[in-house]
Each structure stands twice: as C-alpha cells, then as structure tokens.
Image (cartoon, rainbow over all chains, first blue to last red; front, side, top):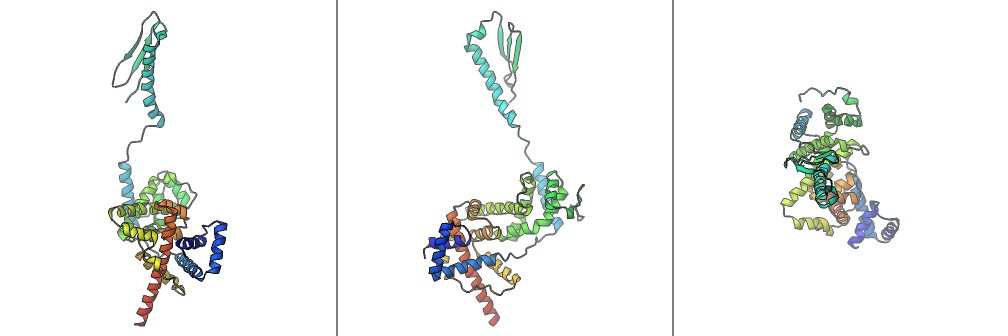
Length: 149
Length: 210
C-alpha cells in the first residue's frame, strides 16, 4: 500500500474525505486485508485516546497559584505603555502641516492670491510648534494652522 | 491575596456561571476572575503539561495563560465556552514556547522523521487491541505513559486532533505547517502510539509473570 493510500484511509476514518474519495477508500478496504488491519489499528488508537486523560491537578494551593497570577497582572498593568493617540489625531498630525504647506505653496504660485492691494501675510511663528498664520487685510481675515509634533 | 475566599462586590461567586464571571471580570472585578481561575486551573495546567511534559514549565505557562486571558477578556466572544477559549490560549502559548525551544536545538533529522515516518514506517500493524479489557484508570495511565514517549510534534498533533477535536486544516494552522504534513505526522503518531501501547502491554505481562 502506498503512503498516499494509508493517509487516505486515515482521512476517511477522520471524516475528512469527499464522498467520492470516501467511496474509493471503501472499495480498497473491502478488497485489501492489509488495509482492513490498518484501519482497525487506527480506529482503536483513536478510541483509546478519546477515553480521556489522566487527571492532573495543579501542584500548588489555590491561594499560592492565584497570588502569582495576580502579581503578574498588576505588574503588567503598572508597566503598560501609555495609550496610543486616536486614529483621528494621528491622521490630523499629518494633515495639518501638509495643509499649511499646501496653502503656502498656493499663495506663492497662484498670482490671484496676491493681487489684493492690501498686504496679505503668512508667518511661521514658532517652528517647533508648526504654526502658520495667514492674514489678509482686504478680506479682513486671519487663519492660523497649528500642529504640535 | 490571603487564604480567605475572594469576595465580589456584586456576585455570589461560587454559583455564578462562567459567562457572568467573565462579564464581571471584564469590568475589572478581580475576584470574579479569581473564581474562573479556581474553577479551571486544573484543566488549563493539565493541557500545558500534556504538551510540555514538565511540571515547572506547565505551571509557569498556565499562569502566563491566565495573565494573557485577563488582558484579552475583551476579545472573548462567547461563541465557545470560556474553558475552550482558555485552552486555546494555553495551546498557542505552549506551541510558541516549543517553537522557541526547537529553534535553539538542531534537530532537523528528528523533525524529518516526525514528518515522513522514521521507524514508524516499518512498524507492523498492531492487532489485537492491546488495551482491551483495561480499567479506565489503567488505560489512561498507559496512554499517558505512551504519550510521554512521543516526540513533541507527534504528541501535539494527537492532542490537537484527538483531544481538542480540531480538523486537519485547523491543526496545520496552529502548528504552522501544511495539511499534508499534519496528515503524515498524525498517521505516524498514531502508529507509534499503537506500538508503544503494545510494548507496555508486553512489559506488564512480563512483570506479572516474573
């Protein structure tokens, strides 16, 4: 018998074969005494395992066993990392500076933004903070972008 | 914690079902979690022992499993029992530990034998059943003895398939190998177990006669 045929016998016993493959195995078992013996061995091996396992209680008192678990839980909680910023905030950390840079680029490249007779100013107040302000006297508006890193 | 029984603020712990205890533990009720540990610690420890076969390792790993369970209580969906969920955590941790251990040991030849059948390939078929007529306790003891003699890969595949009832595909996923390898390992594990049980029967008969 080939190894593939042996594995098919086992898969048949374990209910892992399609109906067609199972029918083929059944024909083999009917015709081949060696296949029948192997099936019998695999079958009783499976049955004895299902008889269960030796009872094996924890060799420590309930209190001592639990005390170690509790201590480990507390230790893990004490050293747990700070919660991560929310997805929205992580996203905004990138969007705000990029938006500010885009506004600056538009201001310098699109002349229409600079035709106003009055002065429009863009300032970067504090480089560390990543804050930018746009002020237009003609529009009477001031826009400030702030991004903390 | 001292020797006194834990007290929950809201629950009668001994009579509360597992799912109620899990719900309370999720809310931070440590006493409810302790009750779950007390209820299932033997089973969890036994499963760790069945794979690792060392008392100290099994104790350490079962406690690690409980800590992981506390941290992941939010992921418990309740579609299987709490004990099944705990057992899966224990098995996964045990397999991780064994894999780390295997990486430290050069055992490629042994591994190939496990997958493709070493001596098992040439074993004669065992008939009749050498465990027939045994008392349940004796049967369990012999199986335990035989399991201890298997390699970790053969033992684990038997535990996952026969005792945990996982299908080939699921066993393969957990053991990180192909379904074909699992089928082969399972086949040789069963054949080896049959031979070991026969040897044990022969040893006992010999002991009884002398």
